[in-house]
Image 1 (tube, one colour):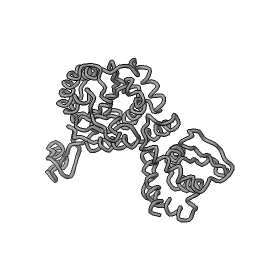
Image 2 (cartoon, helix red, strand yellow):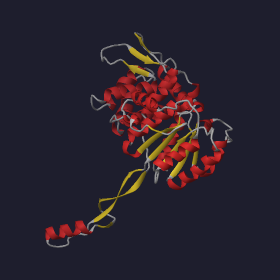
Image 3 (cartoon, rainbow, N blue to C red):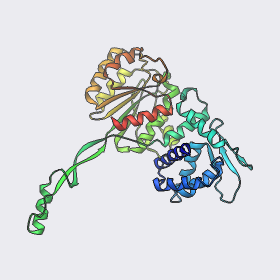
Image 4 (cartoon, rainbow, N blue to C red):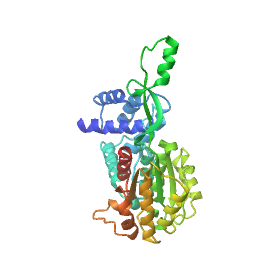
Length: 357
């Protein structure tokens, strides 16, 4: 039962990240319901969760998508129907069955989902990559916050003379000293995504991760593609649907799968844009066709300007990886964090890092 509780609690967290009101009380009711059901039957688990975790009609399609991504099985919409629609992660397409699912269907598909979390996206089939992209779209933005210049009323903090005086004038005496404290706002994240030929197996997944960040904090996220030229793609990634957003971004990126001039593109970014106080995430494998010394000089400028510099290298996820390319060696002294970017688990870890940066 402890394993079941952990699985369903994780599913509830996924639902909350997708906007479903699956709070702790509803999760507790689900676990109580499952005590009286056959948890090996995915159809019973589906309906138990749908009846206890959903609070409004708008929750139902989100619940279905999350259930499909988390368990790999989706119960048919009709309450009186006995058919079960199962989406197998490896196959990437749904089938309709009149018979009850095998007892190990839900654990098996959950295990496949867990395996996909740690697999390199470059070696996935199109169907597997699409499943990972669906899970990426549900990533919760755990952005760190910074202190704003604005204030809000508070019980503790610095004295607020204006509110104190206004209240004194209204009441005829100083009855209470009013105080204020700084508000907070999300720290800005700037993503520079390498779309050159050597990064082509990872570029789409990186841009889908960027889309999730833009959707989470549209006013505190900027995204640029880099290769042989710098392209600002934030506006294109603001569309709600990930596929539509990626298509719009690909139309405006002129150097997709081209060469790599990281130093020149970084110099262009620092000349025309600003990253002061931002977390800069540079996603690239570090293959530099230009002068590595130029990249090192621009990274030094960037490090002085940014709050933190995180370099995402897909090859960092390989055992025994060492940053030996010219670009990586030139940039390494100015990087705060060098992290992997090859799998869903790596992107989840990156989101956690953004929350603590």
